[in-house]
Image 1 (cartoon, one colour):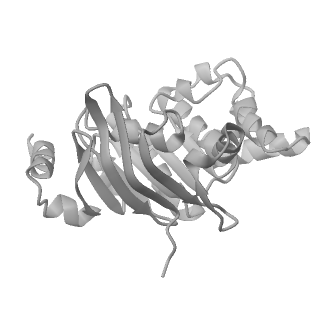
Image 2 (cartoon, rainbow, N blue to C red; image 1 turned 135 degrees about the vertical axis):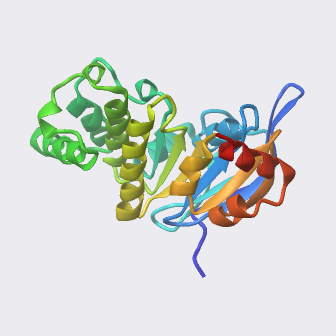
Length: 257
């Protein structure tokens, strides 16, 4: 039986009287894309930020199985160990690529930064790796010395992907990765993400409000409402035969022209 890569057990997070995450539990397996959908205020972004360590959970456990098959309880790791994990085995793709990039250094330096964080020091190797990953995300390697500010929004998002993936993480957290992009750019980015996930055998937790995005990318789906998981299962099963009234509402809303 396949071992879980990440287990979330009875996670709770509140802000005053608002219960942003209420008894959230799920498992994520290697090579699996887990989509999390819900309207604004459903708790999906809070959940992602709890997983990433950006905000502390109130109660509950987040357990990760490392590359060395070691079970790590995230709340018990030191801050230094958590940062190391995010640089090596985990990655985070922000909705706004400017939040995930250093805008005043070159595209190559953005990718090289992450390599240097994990110990790379040979300039030639770092530059060669940066050029390789630019091509992997469909950016001309001749743009290696260009500033991200000279890139389009779609290119900035692809550069952020390269920056995250260069350290070969096993788990990538994505927060609305296609948000703010026009339809044609979204389609190209989604196709790229789907190919990278398959070719690199990535596990992904994908937060989005777009049902079309999860239908294309996610193997399994979680539907959140008011901090609670109201439905979960195989993506096609949940979307084609939704059981919970809230899920039915979300799905039907996407079908209205």
